[in-house]
Image (cartoon, rainbow, N blue to C red; front, side, top):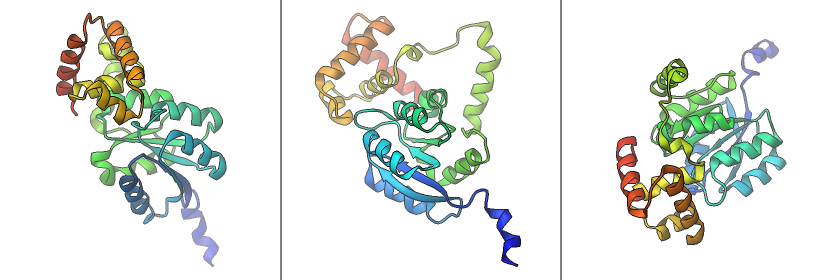
Length: 228
């Protein structure tokens, strides 16, 4: 008699999920919240990319929820490494950054969805259900932007200058725009000041700035226009 109920829930029950975020309180909170639902079963956590890759090989999750900003390898690069080893894993990006900054980069890297942390508890379960069913999840507002870009893309270059930047360079630009110094950015990303200075030099070259002051002015205006 019980077998009759099984087919209704078997497709989604207990999908093995790993959460990757360098903030332990937020990471544990997401795990605890999602532990209430039958769609997923949290099988592991990781605080950085290296641990995430090690745990993925050991635990073989079907879904990975991860942040962009992490020490060392950032989340978008981690997506590429994970999919190179496990092409079928479903990846949901959960980030504090605005969709306009990173969502398209995450999708291009192979993520199946993007949820902002400010909306996490409200939308993460919806996003997981969407990607489990074979779809892609972004907010309705960003979805409209993607459709618009697809329609007009062939008629002209409407892209932002920052699209020339690598994922890490964009992260550094954003932190400069938030008023952080080279030292503070290095501490935030756990990278050396020399590495941050190299990123700054590349950003200046790609965006055509002649001085660090011009870069910081642009970064500040850009962050103001695009959100925190």
